[in-house]
Image (cartoon, rainbow, N blue to C red; front, side, top):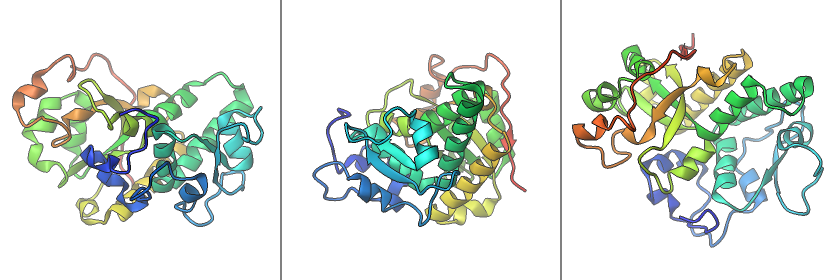
Length: 273
């Protein structure tokens, strides 16, 4: 799918888009939703950490404060510059699904820019990877998250296949990865935060699950839990049962995609109190 062509039935292209049902704004539209329509989905009173209300503004020759860096414009003026394309459309939806996390990502970017200037720090690299390519792997059984840490993909996706959507799920948070899932391909990889939850989590509504995860991620970021990209775990996204033609054990033996662990990382399992 071309990134420039609107398709109001995009949500039928891959199961991951069912996670966007609570911010559904595309039915029957003949073109990209306007910035004011996207802003209408935001939680009432959502503000950048500086206190300014979050809005979406067109990224064209009318863009206010053109000399400001993208993250500075959000922090200082609450303005999220938005183009009519899939990348920015999914970004706007993630502001609706994970508002606290997005505000915190922006605040940390702004703080680093203020302290170190515009060259990316290790923390800003990690924030960008989460924001663009992140997923949340959420499980009520720690052993399932350990499989992610161990790169034990066949165990996680095949031997524990029945656990998916019952004891473990993958939640999209990175807008660039959502864009990739319009036309998924073998090799597409996300970068995961790992969250341990109580079993009751999987009985919550989608909105409740998102609200819970938004608070967890926001708190983790606020406490400095994403100091570098080493704090994120690579995840071969098409291994998730039902997210590709993967109903064969042989699929998971493609070592070019389901790679073995090659080094230690600083990934921690987030286990909220």
